[in-house]
Image (cartoon, rainbow, N blue to C red; front, side, top):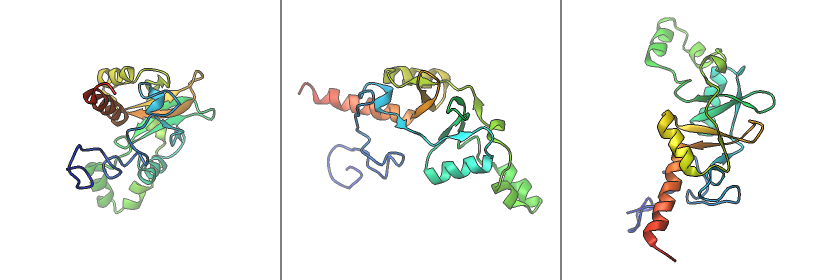
Length: 178
């Protein structure tokens, strides 16, 4: 049964793929289905290195994303921050409770540059999706900022995007020639 409770092949719906408001089986004109540009999220939510960790955490939660490219004033990628980088750990929570200062924990005023991964691996929108998959596997990362020739962020690609591309290709292959 699929997500809608109907018999047949399972196809992820909105409930399963929350970061994708449109159909996950998509192909667009930015790069084609076999290219990064066809699977990336264009114009991703970004943050600056001077932003607070509390602000980054709020953006991640309210926008429903797991990664934020960190950019300078010209939108050049200088880092990447994930929900794990800004997570409130059990130890942090225990310390805040002991100090009766949970509010300070939520309004974390450290800057993003203190927790981000600097100079992240990036990828071009015209790169084959397989190249991105190889980077994910070899670097053990789960998001790649997609940049233009000037290293300005134009999108973000995640491991989920790559898996969806592989699934689409597998479905196309299993259906045989049309």
